[in-house]
Length: 338
Image (tube, rainbow, N blue to C red; front, top):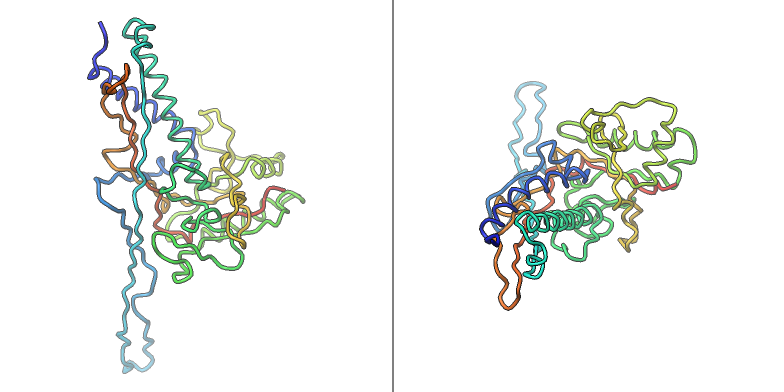
């Protein structure tokens, strides 16, 4: 007896939760943000608005004699960053020929389960590519951390001033939107201690400009990660048990976990003239957020028969965006590949 669309759809939704959770653990950016409560869910809407404090509200009056007039000049301190949604989907398809060739309910479910994992993996790899590198040719409406490859990217490796427009606000006009930047100048691993020195500079710059917390995530290119690990070879470092239990190669710098991200280095795809190659990103995930629509968080739609074809399909739909609440506490390390 063939499996109905309703039964196949409900089975797929049960499998989808495990598939999504399992795949998310492979992505350091989204996994760490999720673990810190940085994944937000919103019910619909045309845009995502985030109020930002980018000015001083009033001025200080010193009282020397006690008769000084109080300066009552005030200004509006709030500005609103606006972010558009990025919507995308991909189908899971099974043909009638496949169903006939794989008799039995379990065989059909196994095929659908394998394709579910494949499609989820594809969607998530594309999400990570765009979020880190801004290099997706499909998810062009999703924002990216790499300000070198996109004029709306959040983090710039620019030594002469940052000029991107982020959330509709200009970094030139609002300088408090500018991120921290350290240039290793190709000397990250040329002498013992160089890697630690450059990372310390970047970490401290982010820490002193953070309204809360400290950097808790460092994403590194494979080469810069290797150089840092080599300089730590004779030293002992500790990492959280949940990371060790996952069997992954992981390091730490102060309180920040460090992971390899294959989408780094970035900034070499023809970015702005004054930008350098980004080898590492030092992030405070309290202020970098991922937003999903509550009805489109890798949501599986119902299976339907495809008109004109001997097959049926279900779509996986995603509505998401990468946003920020504070950029001055984030940073990039440039030219750390040697």
